[in-house]
Length: 194
Ligand SMILES: Nc1nc2c(ncn2[C@@H]2O[C@H](COP(=O)(O)OP(=O)(O)OP(=O)(O)O)[C@@H](O)[C@H]2O)c(=O)[nH]1
Image (cartoon, rainbow, N blue to C red; front, side, top):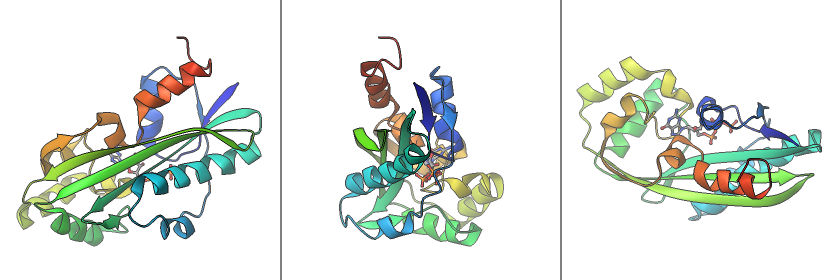
């Protein structure tokens, strides 16, 4: 069975490829805004719903395939953050994040022939250190626009690691895909060797 990743996220594809998982990527083409107003206070349910919507959109076009959908979001003190619209918005996000605990939730969903057959959401907590204006400027000078596609305005595998005092949670979940539970599901479905 063909495995499709319904995502435009570069890092999600890299994680699958590095894990040795054969897949094809396809943009989901889903209007996420309508869904993002729901699931107040339940980031796991929202990320699963968004991942499912992305996978469903591709599964409709590709009923022959097993489709992975995924989504990540950041919350701080109940306020949700999307990817920054521009560099100034990114700076505003970083000023707000400074000194606070960021909760990053990522979900993965498997859809087959238009049916959600598996889903998993995981949360990580990242303690952001106090960020000086000088740091915010130099950080964005170095890593913008690379972080423009990243919720939380960071690439943990890049300079983004400098934002944090401590991290509690799964590395892959933070990058955007709960990879280990997904690999279990793919083995259980015979897509990967056990
Ligand atoms: N490289 C990198 N990307 C991150 C990190 N943290 C979050 N992200 C990315 O932030 C993005 C969150 O936005 P989403 O809406 O879930 O996904 P997207 O990038 O819009 O892609 P779609 O799946 O097509 O919607 C994802 O691409 C995540 O991989 C990180 O530490 N490193």
